[in-house]
Image (cartoon, rainbow, N blue to C red):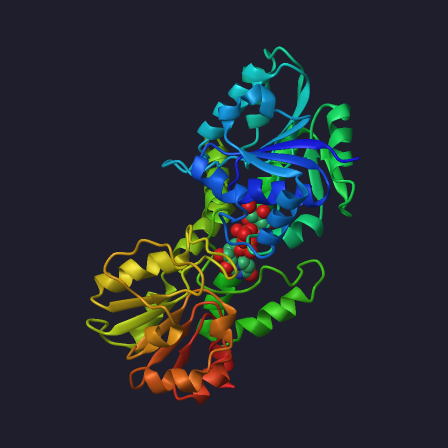
Length: 434
Ligand code: UGA
């Protein structure tokens, strides 16, 4: 028999959690303070772009085991045996995680609790938060509230797939009854379960994202070395990735990591280290390298085109990675203002991410419109449409002697060059010379 679950927050993590748990047969109520979101989701339209989500949303609504509510219904009636907190923890100005929403929701749940339940923290919160929340709010509640830290490891664009094919489930709690309840909830997912204490579970989340960010900054530094010594980063990444101890993933060089997680979580971990009196030197370098890497298109374009003034430059891809409309911390959004500052006429195109405010920028509805007359194209996101682009057709509409800067090392250099375009990428210099 399925469990009764409430998921608070229908952002990226909450919505995926809600629809997947409903798909697994649990009875799920998703809660959000935004009535417009609740209405849209209740009507079967997803508020995020994520492959497979609309199908699961439709399935849950049709079966009747998935519903969306605002807190107006009253927290007491919304609390379930298992109540997830999946509200946002955005980056505050000082780099710390802003826990306002997490605290508010926990306080409200504690005040409304009239029977025991398990509070499951899915929001990414700094180590120590769980303990503080328990002391500050849960300990004085009228009913016993068990606390479980259950960090999420979903990737945007592959979230549904990742939910069921996760490498591990991490559960942090001091209560064996709450841990057993969570194991039962996830019984249909074939993955190892790591049971630990709350602070360790919280730390695993930050350590995972910091380690993956480190891999990316490492390979980006190696790519810059490859450019300097005439080696090819694709071969180098393949060569080191064949060592099982290193592994082949997260070794794609490019213009750096973005998104709602890596930039935020690395900064937050750096902040946590600092306030605990520790200088996390390696992590600081990872962040620095990533900030510098995002400027790479400017460095390369300056070499290829002596003056950007009044030149039309196409930025292809706005989302921080393909298969998502998420533009948070996307490198493309850093590049655009720099190009404008140089006097370039910037045109942007993204297959999905359309709702982005960009001043002084032309928006193209098709890639060909973006490339028309352009002196350069910067591929900022590895959308399939760009990987499979007909570069001969591109060359025929772009300006003479145009440059393609492949910021994601995703194009076939021979196809671009063969079309008569100049090709530049990140650490693929050795490949140029072959
Ligand atoms: C990341 C983690 O992969 C998830 O495990 C985690 O749950 C999530 O953050 C989170 O904390 O919520 P996500 O941000 O969706 O997921 O995206 P990734 O696929 O990990 O990519 C992050 C960034 O790194 C992207 O900008 C991507 O282009 C870049 N990247 C990734 C590289 O530059 N090189 C690589 O080899 C891999």
